[in-house]
Amino acid sequence: MAEIVIVPNKTAAGELVADEIAKLIARRPDAVLGLATGSTPLPVYEALRPRLEGVDLSQVRGFALDEYVGIDPAHPESYRSVITREVVDPLGLDPARIRVPDGSLEGIEHHGEDYEAAIAEAGGVDLQILGIGTDGHIGFNEPGSSFASRTRVKTLTQQTREDNARFFDSIDDVPMHCITQGLGTILEARHLVLLAFGEGKAEAVAGAVEGPVTASLPGSAIQLHPHVTVVVDEAAASRLAHADYYRYTYANKPAWQGL
Ligand code: GLP
Image 1: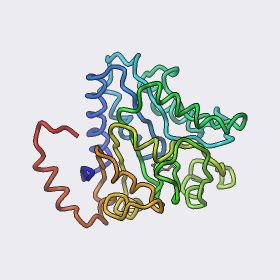
Image 2 (image 1 turned 90 degrees about the vertical axis):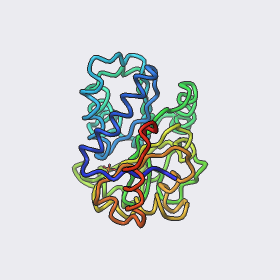
Image 3 (image 1 turned 60 degrees about the vertical axis):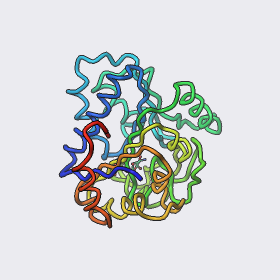
């Protein structure tokens, strides 16, 4: 099963995951990072800054999970812009080595397979950062997504559009479609690190970690992966039936084990 780490707050979560990423890059200067957008991973990116200062990042590669379809890449809320603003610029990564799925309408039917080919050519993702939607989506794999799915165009649920309306002037401005790595794509990353904060995520987290493995809750796909770390605050952990066991396990974790 996944390792569940319950931390006091977002800052502690960011530091824990940033430590792991910094170790990965020290071990493998051409590490392939799986980058996520949304508000959840921001403490990780923030905590990475001091840890990567002075480190040669010229070989690090990255692949974002998803992008809106039909959005102007220059729009401040395109995931291309978000990744540039929150990750590439502050950390000083090479923009040419960081890919975001191409959400432009022209040729959209081929953008998924192109993205898959680029991930394969990079040798696959070493560590994939994941958030989770209130409806249990990871990337933009909405409920019902196949566990075998690859990068493709999906229709956003109304719930997700409402959740993401806060980033736009109004819900009408939130795109209807997205292009997202599939669950099958995500499951091929070598280490999955899913973060979640706040009461609003508690049900999705409990379903993903302890519920049945079901396409109705796409986050439950993580139960099929051999190396998963779930980092949650107390509020996001509040619906976990075995929270005490997770705390006990983490407190007694062998020092050699790492995340
Ligand atoms: C967005 C993203 C997901 C993200 C999720 C949660 O729609 N496509 O990758 O995990 O919703 O967002 P947040 O972290 O802001 O709660």
